Amino acid sequence: MRIAETPLRDCYIVETDVFEDERGYFYEKYNEAKFTALTGLAGHFVQDNVSKSTYGVVRGLHFQKGDCAQAKLVSCLEGRVWDVAVDLRRYSPTFGKWFGVELTPENRRQLYVPRGFGHGFSVLSHSAVFFYKCDNFYNRASEGGILYNDSALDIDWKLPEEDVVLSEKDGVLPLFAEGNF
Image 1 (cartoon, rainbow, N blue to C red):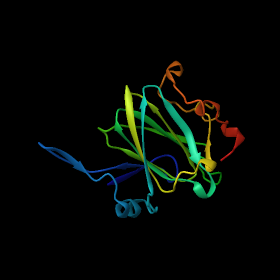
Image 2: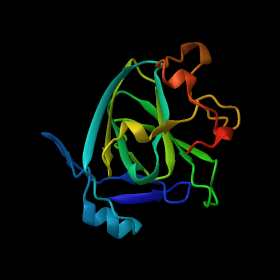
Image 3: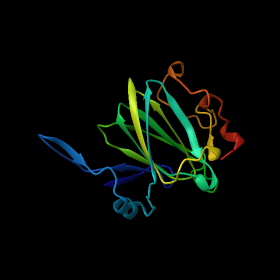
C-alpha cells in the first residue's frame, strides 16, 4: 500500500500493490494497520456502500454533519468516475478548496476523504459501480450537501453541462456560501 498526498490536508490517494500472473491478479484493497501507519489516521470502517450509475450522473456534493460525520475510502469497481473532495473544515488551511481524481478498476486508486469534507463523483463511462467504506454509520438527519455546480467552488466535473444527470434532491442543494456544514 502506498499513500500519495493531495493538495488538501488529510486527503490521500491510496494505491495498492498488485500481484498478477497468467491466472489473473490479487491485491489487498485495504489494510487498517498499514493505512494507519502510513497516514497517522485511524482507519476503522463500519459501513460499506455500493452504487451503480449511468453516464453523466453526478452524485454530490454530500457530507454528514456533527457527531455523524464520516470519513470515506472510495473506489470504482466498474467503469470510470471523476471523484471530488472539498475541504469544509473552517479551521483548515485548505478550507473551500477541492481536489479531483479519476478512479477506475484499472488504476485501482482509492481516495481517502476525511471527516469534514464534502464528496461527490461524476460518471465518465457508460456506467460505473462505485464502492465506499465509511468510518461512521449513515444518519439521514445529519446529511448535508452543496450544489455541485456552485460557482464559488468552480469544480470541473469533466462532463458537458448538458450531459449532467442529477437527483431531484441534489439539484436543490444549498450553495457553499450558505455554510451549512
